[in-house]
Image: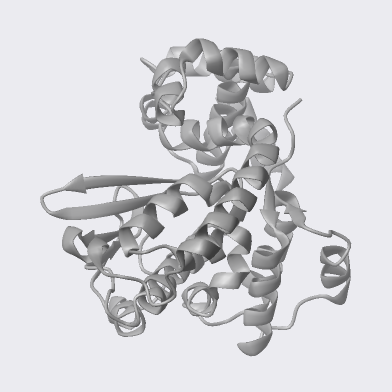
Length: 326
């Protein structure tokens, strides 16, 4: 069994505080449960937190507004490390390396193309995905501006989902163009902006914080590999073990050994992700052929055979049972 992914308590507290400032009242029982954890919060509790926010909040841009209020210190040692870097580019490198400290399961990638750097965000959760990804995007926008003294903002932002309100409201709030129904979530920066110095750069502090972040990352890495694999499979369902391992910076053989140490395997993790994705698509009423092709199967028959193995039901039987439950 893999370990449960976690989120730093500081980020969860930042979300609670932002919700309160924006007039969102959360259940006392949930806040009490959050207070039980000294440093890191299970992703399942983070899911419950966002569900409560989604139920209580009426503003369609609530996620963005909350993200724009997150401060560097709310990102634990990783956030303080970013602040102490020399340039925005070095802070981006640190963010890519130490992002699991902020939240396990999700991941970041950076791609340079045509004089621009695209920071792609791959969320590792399904619950309240639109609301939460907008909060993360808002957080990145705010921090890039704050760390550069207002000199840098994204050239554009991409969201995978449709706008939750009028598109112009997004651009007014974020101060940059926003594209919807894109292939990925992410932000685009001009490559020359990565050379902009940070206002709080401090080499001595950075060296100390990097040691602390390395220790924290090492303590998480063995626990979080399975969650990282599942997040990558969720966004690249066609990929096999070798390509996922390459993205993680290790060999396929090393990935197999590491997962075995956790009591898991790539096949087990991939099947679990594809099962969840397939069930979600079936509940939505998507066509079987579309589901099969999107999840990397050659045809409907191959998908139906795999789904029966996962769920003990055919896709049609699963749909009938789901409809009866509702």
